[in-house]
Amino acid sequence: MIMPAPFYPGQQKDQNNSIPMSRKQFISALTKLGQEMYHSLHPFHKLLHTGKLSHGQVQAWALNRYYYQCSIPRKDLTLMARIDDVELRLEWRSRVIDHEGDIDGKGGIKRYLQLCERLDLNLNYVKSCKGLLPASKFAVDNYISFVREKSLLEAIASSLTEIYAPSIHKERIDGLSKHYKWADDYALAYFKKRINQARKDVEFGREWVIKNAKTRDDQEAVLAAVRFKTEVLWAQLDALYYAYVDPGFIPPGAYVPKGFKEKAWHKND
Image (cartoon, rainbow, N blue to C red; front, side, top):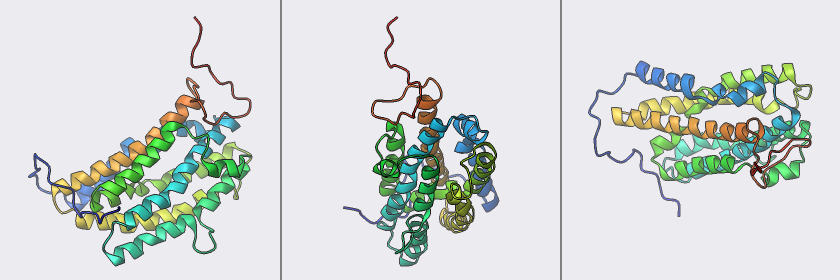
């Protein structure tokens, strides 16, 4: 049973009696987190955006990322089920529509599948979520659990990686368009649309968090939630790099791109 979320985190044993950060300091701390920990810094993304991944490696990235994309509405609906404030629920509902669409179903997930189509992936296979790396699934499922179990302040704060998203979308669009023949407007429609959607979500989410994180403990809880989300995103790329770049060990049952030279788990010395 999903219960309404407590608004604030529970009291810690060693309560922080420090003076709360000013608005400017708080925004600066959030910005610094992105500069140091956002997954745009990951080596896998560097390879992707500079055209150094093979077609099969990009397929593996798109396939695993799909699980994250299709799980975002699950995450948001889980959060909405725990919100008592009708106005806040109404505001948050637009995020689900952005990803799933309204009655027509023409949302971000459908646009993301256009990328998978251009990459010659079987869309039924993609949507089945078979072939995922275990760490990809565990990381995303842990994000949903976080939103289901934490306070409202922490759950909403975990979405603030949106602050950093427009820049990575621009970098991705430029890099993929430059280096990969398949990367046309149809393939990149999801990322192009998300630039403005993310800005809209950031404006609301950031202001809501700044307004409601009243104490230094609240602010530190917000920063911890954002840090957790950056680690979710980073862990997915760690798994992709390990399986499809170096050392190239693909877990049993995970997607094996055509022509990929899969390394054996056990070698006879």
